[in-house]
Length: 285
Image (cartoon, rainbow, N blue to C red; front, side, top):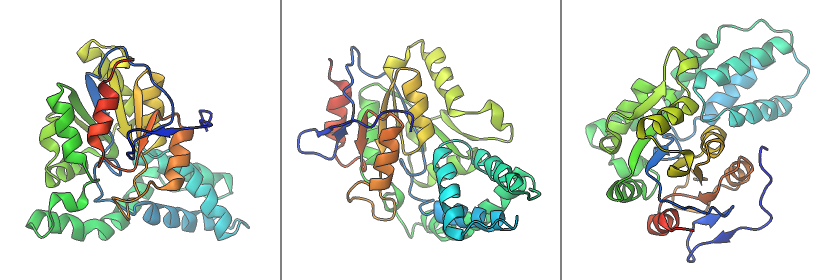
């Protein structure tokens, strides 16, 4: 936890838009930063169910006496903490955890390749269905995503996309979901030179290039990292607590708790109430 959990929240206009912390805005947002997986895209829904068991199996190789349940809790905590950062950081932490248990870790890049092979096996059919037209983009988008993006653009907001997923995959999947046009050249993902391509650096670039301060930025995401980064620069953070396996329903309670603790100002299960969210973001005071 990096922020005190609010004692009381409220919902706007009988909608799903939950105000966790009041934000007094003196000017409307000029730039918006979106995470991709779990915030807009559902193509990779279920990725923790691939990553966490893989990591538990690797940690067991150390000969630790911890039970599977104990290892799962350890892994879940650090995977969640690092969600939003580039995938390599989760693999670096895995190597550290294995070494701390007396094991001899492989390269974090090796672990990342192993994870991506498993993940691509799980989602290959989703990508194929989108490419062949057997599935529509809306089948794998968080509900209301396109309407929210369109509404922000109509308000003159410059849109940016930043993901911890490899940039080639992000660009391809944004095209498959037909949302790439909202962002133009402003799509950023993980690169081999991971230390020089963080979401914090993307935010710094946004502020510099647009000559704005953090108060003119709004960020949307379902991970600790983007919430913390947006708040640290003085921006407004909107948390997406989407139940990715059952989109369109209630917020995922586990995500809600974690993202509230990360310091989010507003929280929604998806963008179904985009009109209310837009009014909230663009009202003054």
